[in-house]
Length: 230
Length: 311
Image (tube, rainbow over all chains, first blue to last red; front, side, top):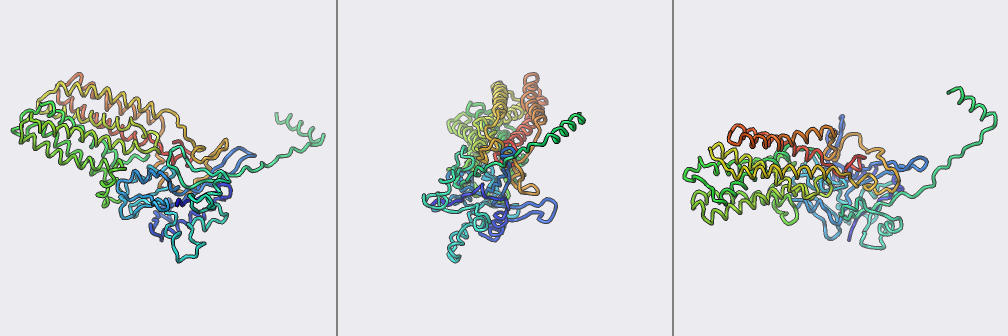
């Protein structure tokens, strides 16, 4: 099994609901709490497993806003696991989820340095590294109805821009979506083989701008105005 | 990268300490031990003790960087995959080897096979440890300025250089002069300067990575609209260190001046005067501090690309 996410950049509206829901679930989850520093003061900061940044692509009239959620990519060749000196970071053979044993981590930051996606953040309060667990304490919970056994971010997304599934199964929803929509991993050139896939924004037809032909009087007025302004 | 003083101090002092241990080993391996009857006044013993103290200081300083130091003892258990773990294991192995080295110096014949073998083992472990320190940084593909064999080479050369100059100072304090060591220092000064120049050329080349390759968006133009946060997060604090080109060039010049030029001038003109040698040692150390600070400050992590910055 190779569990991971597919993120649809075409439908994400950048509402940050996944960010909030992730924090809410995980702060009371197995790696919780996710501490905050100065939450109600001038420079609030804290641990998040999932962050959304927004980009602008192209030039008007072909411009588009692309909201870009990023969490752990559950890499096949995870450098964060290789560099870890204590063995706190590990990748599960059974489902490919990369996890951190909070009892072993010494907080040296090296795994955060090795991660190109910024998926690992140091918790200043516990002194340990924390990261997305793909809601491992939720997806296997048999006390939940089967439809709820998905990561919190996927469940909460109002535009279903996030999909969860097994990439090893060619008929799973995530494999099909990746195939049909030309999904790709981020920064493949580094060779970490990220599991999560991003579906590129669809090409939208641009807004057509019609130039209305002005009347003869209007043209004369424009010409006169231009002459005066010089 | 955010230049953390604890790591800068660690890499320099441990480099200097291992340099001292390396040259102490070389001294014995070549059969130049001097008077061992009184260990306290023997410059070689002084070198080994100072070297070991510096190594220990460096290791202690490196633990200051840890956010959860109570788990530091676990860092020795991933020797097979992690360079940080390898560094820790080699650093720990140094201690019994150094004690064996001192013991053979005092207990056995100065030119015996045992003492020479221990000396060679000490030299190898010293180099291996400094190499591993360099590889902690060089194995990170996410930081272009570090992901190069030039980094461990540079760490080893600078460690050996500072160790050699310090040893030369200790020997001259005990009114001993080693022509061979002086020649080696001159060679190391040249080599260190050349590799550092090649390194600066290497990191000056434009990056192939951009916000477009990072996001995978194929559009002509991609720019950051909003980070989604109202203040700095962990990633921005850790990786978003900024320094102007003007400042970098000035600091590079100062570091080379202090690290290479001043010691060269001191040792060429006044190699018999202890005061000038002491100036060389101090300037070299200050230059190293600047050099290592720049090593961190100039390195740009690829996460910066997602924040619309260079990497």
